[in-house]
Structures are given as C-alpha cells and as structure tokens.
Image (cartoon, rainbow, N blue to C red):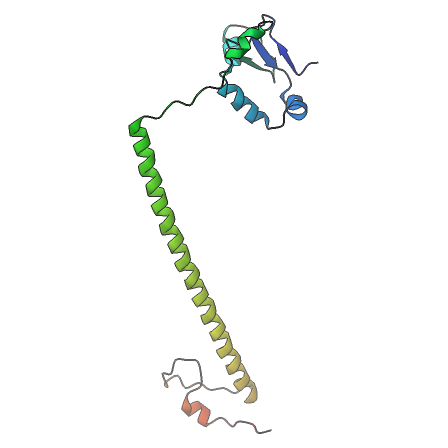
Length: 174
C-alpha cells in the first residue's frame, strides 16, 4: 500500500499513512509539514469530499491546490509561499502598547523577584543565627545537668538566661 497518491481525478493528493510518511519522508514533525502546506496555499478537503458524498477512508488526509495537478508540472511554478498580510496601523499600535506593558510588567516582576530573593537570604541568615543561639543554650543546659531556668520577667527577649538565672548557675570548673 502506498503512503501518498493522487486522487482518481488528479485534482488533489492523498496522504494515506501519515505515520509512515513522517517516519520515512520527513525531517520535521508531521504538523510542521501540514503548516507548510497551508503556507503554500494547500487546503485540506476531507470535509468537502464527505459533504459531496465521496468516501474518505479513516486516516487519510486529502489536500488540494489549484496549481498542483497530476500531469501538469508547468502549474507548479505558481505554487508559492503565501505572503503575510501587512498589519493595519491601529493593530500595530495595539501590539506596540501591549509590548510596552509587558516589558514594564517584566521589569516589575524582575525587581520583585530580586526583593524576594534578598528577603529569603535575610531570613536564612536569621535562622542560622537562631540555630547558633539554640546550640549555645543547649550547651549551657547540658553543663547544668538539664536544669535550666530562664527568668521570663527579665525582658531581654533574646532567649538567653537573664542575669538572675545565670547568677544561680554554677559553672563547672575543669
């Protein structure tokens, strides 16, 4: 069975097996090939054929171009890539405004990202400082045999024993 063929009337071609076609004949994806066909003015006519009562087999794709016909190679010179339509000035202005807005949003988000990264660095340093304090408190507690009193009325708020609590601690001598 063939991968591609002309229609019986020679006015369009049929891709019968797109998987084999893609695997053995294309260097790009099948979807890219279809986009190229569209760029050159080919149209998929499966639904038109079905509407006219013709049978389209499952998996087949039928494509037509007025200048691509069996046995008429001279017409192929007129199969050309379609030119992009120029945009209207109002549409260009709208795109330009949207582009400026997006650039502004991008700059704002980059700045916010930088601020958040700085905040994360500060918080990480603060966590490390708190870990050090905790470690120091654990050392003091271990020296006291697990007895550790913090005077909550001292108001020093740094998690360290107050003067009153440290004055009652006996520091072991070695």
